[in-house]
Image 1 (spheres, helix red, strand yellow):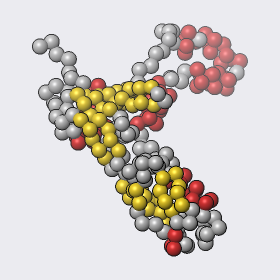
Image 2 (tube, helix red, strand yellow):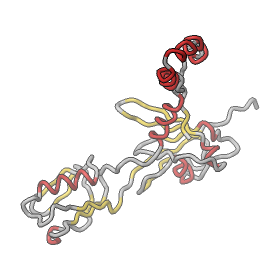
Image 3 (cartoon, rainbow, N blue to C red):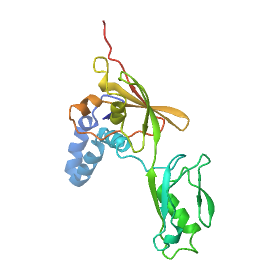
Amino acid sequence: MMTKSTAIIGDENPCGTRAKFFHRLWKLHPVVLMLLMFTSCQSPTSQYENAAQQAIGRPEAIRLREGDVVRITFPGSPNLDTQPQQVRRDGNIALPLIGEVKVAGMTPTELEKELVTRYSSQLVSKEVTVTVVSSSYVVYVTGAVLRPGKVSSDHPISALEAIMEAGGFDYSNANLKKVTVIRHEGGQARNYTLNLKNTLKGVKSEPFYLKPSDIVYVPVRFSWF
């Protein structure tokens, strides 16, 4: 479960301070009063909770990278089907008739649309299927785990799964409530704090899926001794 701190300015409750105003308005126009109370008394907390759920929910669409293995098939034109091939260092693959195609950075769906356009004159039906046969990426796990270091995966992996791949928590030292995922986005480091203690206790929560090169840090519990 991801935690997000929010600042609410002021201690005054708008629903309480406007009681007299609402009482007068009720006498004049009760329908208008009901609309005002609904809009003015809504808590902003639910908005932040929804944003957090969107951030940690499902894994994002796969984007092809160097080393991924893809197979491309053409329903209706099987003569164009390819054997599985690996995306090269330059991000390209070689396809019949059209030659080199830059695929790195594209999702399978985007590549399918691109190939429908480029093969339009050869296709019986406007269909192309891109299958990712294998896709691997690396994340890093450090801190109070048994085997800190690099973790490779060929499928979407959550922060908890990555920690288990690193040998699991060092339960004598690990602070499970403050696990941090460090992610570089737009040239800046962004931190996400996860309470994995609740997850391990069976509290229902969405898994936090990692992106390539994410760093999962399990801090040590503070102790006076």
